[in-house]
Length: 411
Image (cartoon, rainbow, N blue to C red; front, side, top):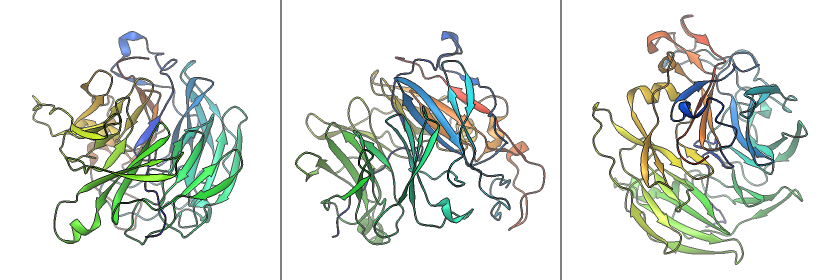
């Protein structure tokens, strides 16, 4: 097999959204608001869907960049054409310390949200985007950087190597840009050094051809997982295999298969956690001291009869959420649970207020431990409408609301 490292973050993005840093400054609603949703000042931008949201730590405090998106208005479940206008380039930064938004310099070109394609590192928001080609975002992927302190964008150019769907993850002071599946053929996975602008290919990993490949850093090592393509072709449940890569020795070691099915691997204080991505399973955690898996405890039945789903992990200084869009709709019909790695207990992500169950195509990302949700389109009753290729029935509206869920626990 050709070289690859298959990993991703909940990038905001990616899609799962992941951010680090303390929660200081995200408690503007007061201690009585912890565990609840709080309405923030509206975005100082036009209403939009599919904006890019990235949590970034700046001088020890969390910030969030919101940039891009478009004006596509399409009812839930309808088949709609692309937005007629261009993608937005404008953006704004939210500072929870004073509960304010600050407009930013425009991005080099319009962008919209792609899962697993954003990360905060070194006081900058990093975006992996194929939208330089226009609204369809079918061009070659490029790496963009926004420095929050300097209010400056930098285009680091096209990602080298064959064109593939790729992800973005921070590893120390560097970035990994891997392919996320072998389904289209293998391709090299790359390490980018922001200090030098140099790219380096990583060696091949020991996993068989797989899809839904994710990894997280653990110290100077990376743990990755992949779901077996061969199992799916044979009609079997996909085995979740794992391996770890040492950045110092530049070598791979095979790990035991996970004991439960799962989609996404996210980091936590207790080790990588396998999350089902709205597959009803309790998940599993990998202990870095022994490299052995253990299942998370069963959450028990929901008194309201809802399906329980593991929607992310809370750490001491950050969080990884697996609720990238339509957060209000998801929390209204599902029991979305978060695993608090420090407390070793589940926390429920409550339903959003003020008719947010009627909003979809919003964007979200972790802001420290908290969850930021912005934008979207509201359709009363969640009604499906609009003809194929159309832009909806006219009953919907774009919104520029911003909400913050204040996670309980250490700040």
